[in-house]
Structure formats: structure tokens, C-alpha cells
Image 1 (cartoon, helix red, strand yellow):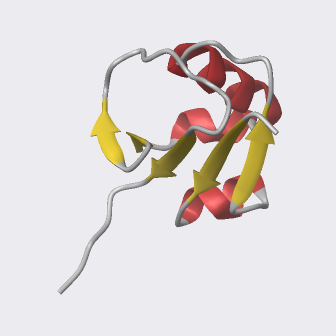
Image 2 (cartoon, helix red, strand yellow):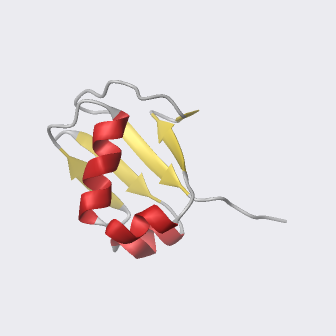
Amino acid sequence: MGVKVLFFGVLAEVSGTSIKHYNDVKTINDLKLKIQDDFPEIVHYNFRISFNSEITDKNLILKKGDEIALMPPFAGG
């Protein structure tokens, strides 16, 4: 098992899953490219990235067991 990616909201609908594992990705940018290859429609959606429960916009280095969450904007009341 490599990196675990969690898809939330509309991104789970676009990907057809809420969890997917990726191997052989070195950085968050590498992971984003693999996700775009697997789910081309995802480029049409805005989302934030969480790295091990911390929101980030950095191109961090990934290691086995890391958890990445893709989160679209949330609305609430």
C-alpha cells in the first residue's frame, strides 16, 4: 500500500470512489497528475488538499502511509 487518497463530496461522485491508493508517487504534484490521468473530469472542480489532516498548498514529498484528502468547497448553515 502506498498513499491513501480520500475523495469527498462531488469529487467522490466524479471518481466513483471515496478511497483510492496510489503507489510510486513522490510528491503531491505527482499525485495530482496521476489523479487527473485516472479521472480527467476532476480538473473542472475546485478543491483543497489535506496532507495527513493538515490543509496544504505545498508540493510536499510523500511517503508510504500518508493520507491525502481532496475536499471541494463546503457550505453549511
